[in-house]
Image (tube, rainbow, N blue to C red; front, side, top):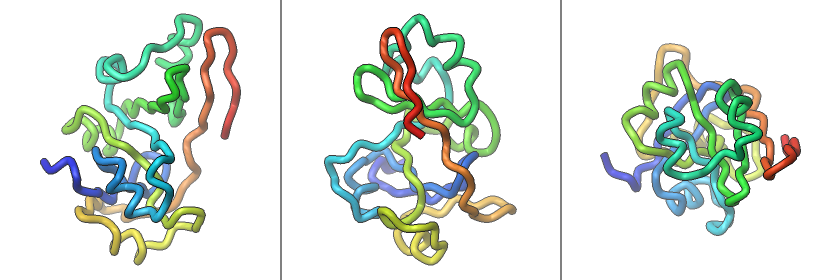
Length: 146
């Protein structure tokens, strides 16, 4: 599988672009290439390779659903534990993830289809749902960002 491809996938929250190449995602979204993306992984074993969860929050992170955590190392990682999106992610070590729309715009299927290299569609099609919650974790406290 080519790591430079941009996939259009229905995630468990909303339609999204996924790629292992952050620059390819920046180009597809039309946003600043220095802006970081969140990482999606399919298991906590894969997550351990990228971030260390502060001991105080390990149980909470393990039990969370549809939640992204921004870690002290400035990486945002989300573990997708079940469903069709999880089965897609299992094929990769990680994927950078973002919503499938132009930077600052609402979801438009025609735009998403035009910018994606590979379209992964199931019977339900693509839809814009509620985004995941985002929390910043420090050593001792947690701050809600979205």
